[in-house]
Length: 296
View 1 (cartoon, helix red, strand yellow):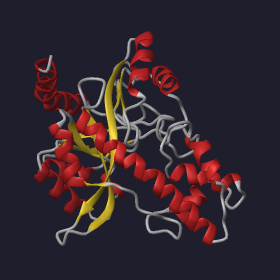
View 2 (tube, rainbow, N blue to C red):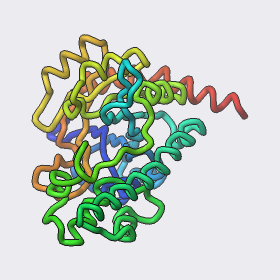
View 3 (tube, rainbow, N blue to C red):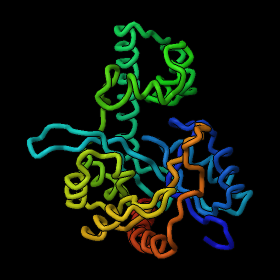
View 4 (cartoon, rainbow, N blue to C red):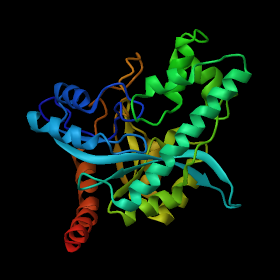
């Protein structure tokens, strides 16, 4: 912190994925909250980054282009396991062609996944309108579980998005469906190949975090989230140290308005951690820029 103002937030979402604020509105809120450096990390898309960068100019803020990639842990037997999210941070605005091609496939899979969840809800006698799911997602945005959850609330089957997840949409729930996620190790390799910094998101939500961290470290993982609104998670900080990973964190803000949601800037990342993050990114981002320039 500097004079009481949180300087950085490295994890947040907009209407380009499952957040409820547009990129400009998110940047405005971050500015009002005292954030000076904001990483935009929508699910499986970087579509909101240009608008965020444009909005940030008015406030003297800096935007780190990012994306949260949907992945699956690949077990030793080759079976796709639990859902894993890997954050990718870049030094320039647009995703490399190879990255965007893979993200586009994941987004296409999100449509099929959401449709499957709607079908399962119909079979459970809890029908929702597919058109409502798409409306909640927004024009051109691949629908996800939060959008199906909001359709459940609209249909009167549940009283809140939280109840929708608890009853129907949680991992392994009666209306849950898998998407077209990448194997997590492959996602980390892709991030590195396209000039990004790969960071494991919210490891405390994993069933087998140690196995996931081991696998992703072998693939080239740079860091993992260990800071939350309640402070540093010692167990995961120790795990990060054991595998020589940069320790980071962010609010994971979606703008839901829920009482328990962590607001922008409410996760304090020490200056030392930010310096380690930038030190890790410097050579990677420089190589990426040089590669782009060499193509002209």
